Image 1 (spheres, rainbow, N blue to C red):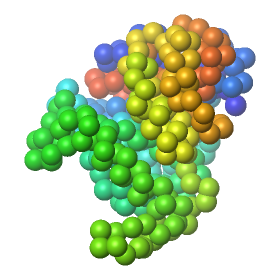
Image 2: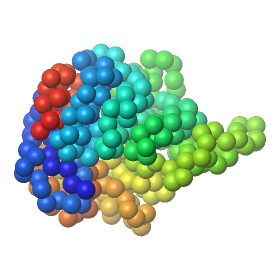
Image 3: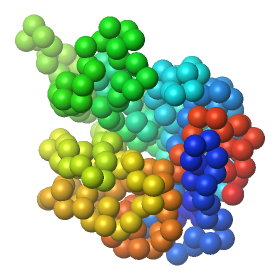
Length: 284
């Protein structure tokens, strides 16, 4: 399936765009948009309307950020409630958080939310997971101890180990040594992507170690085929299919990125973008 457009929002403005008529041959490339939920985009009904426009324009995925706030210090909408609105308003696009910082959430609750949302969307959920960060105090402001990368990495791994059996409807361990089923049966489970950076090996190795479905790369201004090649080399032997998702940045040569192994290009709509501008991006 090939979506006909890719769009990039950077520092609150659209910095690059490929119109729908210009991307027509990449049968192996999917196109998505990932929306900040701050400011005018903190209204779930607004995001649902944008998702409807994106679906009509041929985008393959509509994803949302999971933050309490960002550098704007504007409160964010809850991603799960927002995604429920998107699920009810659309029929085809894949959807999900990109990404949920699992160390900031209880894995058993995420399992229940994800299972419910996947049912509501008729199996369209993609679950993005990551460390999160404390750059805006989303951990430390509430006295949570996970303020360094290593502590959050350990918490992420522990959370994934609980999350996977819960999503499959299998029994999961409790602290007292008992076992229980959390989320109910969901087979096959929803795809899970792990966040990573093109210059680090932890993300792709974590995805493969846990048997997950892909890596969502963030952090490059101008994506190059070498970023994709380095990521796949760091992952080593991996499940098939294995998604390589390029988040944000610009995509000057989508054909070369796809040939190198990228499977998704996801444009970010940053804090500060108005609802009207986000609608225009979605409708391209």
